Structure formats: structure tokens, C-alpha cells
Image 1 (cartoon, rainbow, N blue to C red):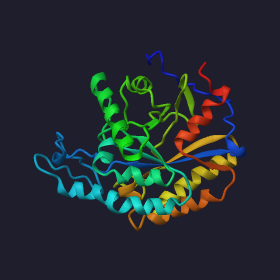
Image 2 (image 1 turned 30 degrees about the vertical axis):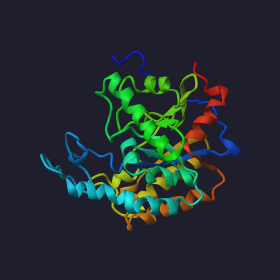
Image 3 (image 1 turned 90 degrees about the vertical axis):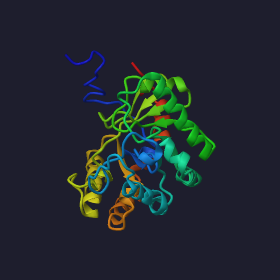
Image 4 (image 1 turned 180 degrees about the vertical axis):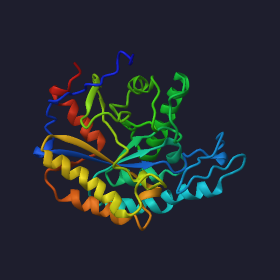
Length: 294
């Protein structure tokens, strides 16, 4: 039997109208994942090295200098390239705390440009096996690193791949958070508890699919896929939300940037699209009584 609290109906056939600002049909969230310096790394005292980058090669029992260098590309080159491409379009930079503690510019520069800085855990790791005291400390350390770099605590959270059964409650208990993205089950947000919004995320409109064997090779693979999702949702005419995931070390490679530029050009001039930071989408949902928890 499935867990008693597993909701497989959700909003159902006739979901509530989120009434996006200015009559928009689609709320589009650009999420830039910032993980540089938070990958598993023997040189950072971790128990293992991160095994995946442009190919799969896990170094065991020694420092993985190649992997470290690959992640450093995102901090040294990718950040500036992505910021320039975004221009005036707002995005959410989902930042690992250790990445920001090591390289504060990864959060400070996007914040200075008006982008949201949200939390993506301390290390780039999933939380499913964490006990409560450990996870509580991880959340606090992540908030502290982001606040030190930007002057403000994050209000949103996204765990790498898998949260623990306690994550959402611990976020609410911490006090700064009013949304998380630890769900992949819908195209509209929901209010999971009073004052706390669950904003679904997705792995399909995501540059991680440039990794070997995951489907994207040419820049047009990324742009055609994302634009197809945008066009289909707009043609359907029912209010929806779409997330597009980016990674500094992935999308910023020269041959991939045209794909990102094509997507940004498509969305920039369409009044049916509300390009918004995730915190703004969550705040909007909290004003809509139709989304109040039942």
C-alpha cells in the first residue's frame, strides 16, 4: 500500500487559477544551480570524490584535481557568461552553502544584479539518510553562508534530488523559508502548510541532459526542447508553471550558449509569460485564497 499521506490527485482535472500577474498564462522560472566548491572532494575533507562531469570518472583514494578543475570553470567563467546572457530577466540562483563560503562572488554578484539567492544544501548531496540534528545544522550553515555573502537569508530551498522526511518541517522551523522546491509532481505550486509553498521543479528542461547519454548534444537540443514545452503550454491556454534548470559549469560552454540565448530570446518578448524569481511566484501564491491548504 502507498503511504497514507501520498497525494496522487493533487489539483485534479480543474486546478485553481493562480491568476499570474498581468494576465500571464505561464509563470517561467529560470533556476541557475550553483554547486562549484560544494561537490564531494577529498581536498575538502569529504569521504569521496564527485564521480560525474562531462564523462564519468571516479577517483578513489586520492585527490580528484580534474574534477575540481571542471567545477571551477563554473565559478571562473560560467557565472559571468550566464549573468550577461540573462540581462534583465530575473532568475533564481540556487546555491550550495559551501560553494558560497568558498567563493562568495557566486552569490554576491547575482544578488547585486537583482536575482534571487536560494539555498541548495551545504554540500551538493541528497538528504534522504540525514538524521534531524545533522540536517538542522546543514540548513543553518547554508543560511549563514548565503547571508554572509549577500546580507540577506534565503527564503527558498531545494535539496539535491532527494529530501529527507524531515526537511520541509525543519525549513519551517528555521523561520526564514517560505517555499521549497523538493517536489517534481505538478506544474502548479501548492501550499503545503500555512505560509509555506511547494514549488515543483523538473529535470527535463534542464541542461544536465548534456551529460553523456542523457539526450542533449547540440545547443538546439536544449533550445528546441525548452521552447517546445513553452509553446505547448501557451497553446493549451491553461495557467501553468515551468522551470528551466541551468548549471554554470554546463550551459556556459561556448557551444551550448546559443541554446540558452535562443530560449531567453523566445521568452523575453512574450507578454503571456511571466518570468519570475521563485520567491516571487511563492509570494504570489500565498496571496491567492484558492491555494490555501484544505
